[in-house]
Length: 183
Image (cartoon, rainbow, N blue to C red; front, side, top):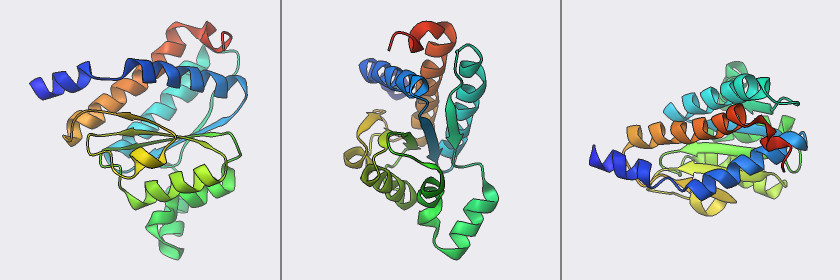
């Protein structure tokens, strides 16, 4: 339990605050936010988008334009079957993403080929890329324009802390809706 406590205590709060500001700007500028991950990180991505689209948006003048790319199962399976599993997020963004939109991926390892491919494509197409990572960091640590690294390699701890950070972002808007007007 001391490793978990240490990882929580080492959340880079300055980086979280910068992300809150970035999400506030995205809201004000009407940019889309794409969020995704694999496994438990996929569940966290969906949870985060649910909270952004409902709870945080309920208190703001303009609702967040956010989408979890983990939700469209028929499209995911079609892309996997007809092309490759590594293409499932990139190909969805090819349909929906625009320059200056935000991409947030969550990954414990930082090395999943489908996440790496999506972030690489997003960088090349002018999106702002963000990764929540575990202590292994992986290729995404160097590829994403911004990253928050949880100082642990324990999958459960990292996924828990990623969700804690997501809730910090959500509640920043829910408890301080004027934050979007100050950016």
